[in-house]
Amino acid sequence: MAKPVFGFLAFTTGSYEGAIVRDMRLANSLHRRGFKVVIYWAMETNRGLVDPAIQQTYFLRGARYLRSKPSVWMERLGRLGEIYPQQRRRRFLQQHPDVVASSLANFVASMCDAPADLGPIIRLEKLMVRDGVTHLLPTFVMACPLALAVKQRGRHAFEYLATFQGEEIFANYAQNRGRLDDYYATLRRCVAGSPWPAIAVSDDYAIRLREDAGIDPARMKTIYPGIELPAIGKKPDFSVLLEKLPGLSPALPIVTYMGRQDSEKGIDLLLYASRILKDRGTDFQLVICGGSSFGWEYQNVCREIAKHLRLAIYWKRRVTDEFRAALYAHSRCVVYPSIHREPFGMVAAETMSHGTPVIVPDLGGITESIRDGQREGGLRFKVWDTHDLADQMERMLKDNELHSTLAGNARAVAEKFSVEKMTDQVLEHMGVGKG
Image (cartoon, rainbow, N blue to C red; front, top):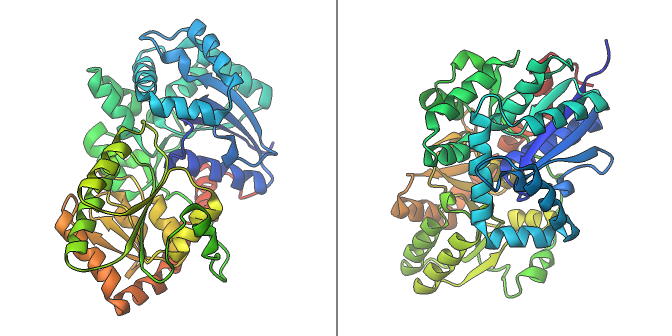
């Protein structure tokens, strides 16, 4: 039997969304095991996440969906923008979030139509024939109509695996267009078209998909996302942080937010909780880092809130892997104050891999990311409750015995979510040897 060839239909806005990070870690892991892997980028690219030896193709540009009906001419026009460096393109999209919103909303509407947009279907079919893809892994189930349509054409033998890891983003666009029922029907149709149960990235997310979209629990399997575990040893030097954050002190506890700076992440709750602690006389440094998928309006509002609350904050947007690792390692704790039902908590798992405890809301799959059996690497606060968040932050900052216990558990809990375990489980789920 020929060895499988894995194709990733990598759907991204170009930011470091958890879903694309998860998929590219899986792609890199499969490549390390000797499998042939190809990446088909949709909407934007994020080539820095991928092993340079892996073949990558820009498959589908977001400009195709800038109008209500897919336009090949707009897509061709969009190619002209590629003469500019990706950093400049990304900056433009951050400054014009309506462009991203329009493209994604029109894409969702197109995928809800039957048949889906024919141009990308034929293009995807040609690429998979060229590369001999036997197993296709779309980043989102909302992109699976393209795979299902190619499969139904019957000109290339392959199967696809549906993975649920952020479909609520597309549900919002579908609802705004009055097509939420069509959207959920599309998800069910795509799950039914695959020979394997769909992956859900947490048990809670599988429950939510049943409740919201009517996905049969028997057609879902929980496989947690994977993180790259850092080597056990000496912490990164504090000077790595000082290069980007001059004035940061190693003598004062650091509380960090790391993740997308978008409205559903609840950074404003962290700001209010921080003001409460300051008024109680609890002193610490607050660092907020991360990019955005939907523009900088929310971050700008948060900066204004911080000014009114008279909070001194170290703000950074995108940061390097080296900086991120150093910040995780030197933080007293990382707070992830999301206001929505997170599918999973990759930032929480990454934080714990460095031996640093986390604080997360008591809602969603993110609660599963901080525990392994009876062992926990963090605290939970009552979702949307700023005062309870302040209380949990105060416990983390002042109770050294509690902090020591959580920090001692953190690495062991994080090991539950390694990339290697995720890869093993995905391959086993599809009936493929481990390579």
